[in-house]
Length: 410
Image (cartoon, rainbow, N blue to C red; front, side, top):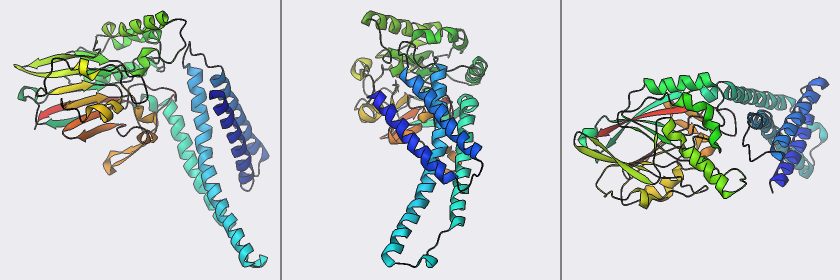
């Protein structure tokens, strides 16, 4: 099935390249440039096909694999822009030709508008250039363009002792993908510079294997200890689901070693369990569930994780996949006041301009809650955009995130 899909993509790209070649001929007279474009497409497609066909699930996503994805996006996305614009113009010309045939318009009265064609070409070229440049920036600088997002949230149920209580939320480290120690150390310094009472990590510390984190343990162990603790839950990538294992025992051994990473970097891992956070004689509950996703592993058990908690206590839930909140949590009668998630990465591609309320990503067509804060019946979820990256080795418009949430009694 996978190989058939790849072959289908290659065939599609071949016909697109032929169509664009004849479309470009009207504007690019230098044959070396035209053939250079074709050769670059052939090289990138061959590079990607090689990496996909010989992908070793026992190793996972290597830097070369991710760069093959990035290079494919570099050629495919701009070409998609040209394809849309040229097809639109050709369809207009085609329907105009049909109209002329039906009305038997004399040839001398038929119009061909080369100025319009040139305008369409120049417009497409401008958009494609911006997109190409953005993808290059995303793979070089954007993936480490860390942003600190601060938000104040008011809750009627919050005990007064916790008014002003600050949560630092990070997620999705994906240690098998990140590759710049200096930039990661700068990001950890950004974390340590924030004021927070508790630090919560919501899953995907690795891509698939425990050893991906080995070289990063000394780096992430520098994260400072919060006064009320550093806590973590697991994400879908932390279960070793994306590999072929020699035995179930080998898979379980990998899983146990992944769980063993957290105490080494100063985090307490919550596996369908809860903890009371006490301040000045008042309490709130912190609940951590294992991964529960609409499309991925369902190891989370909200009932087990909530044992011993009544409806009246203010609750913070850590659950990696926001589909859990959407499908199970937000209407639960036990009232989970604040949920912290990650998982989506905002698909590492989008446009966000908060000043004008612009927020778009392909991720929103998969996840109703894909980045930022959402409210439902006095319950709030924050979907953190993630710390690292995965599959595409970059970020465009959806930057890596460190969130500081201040709780307020409203």
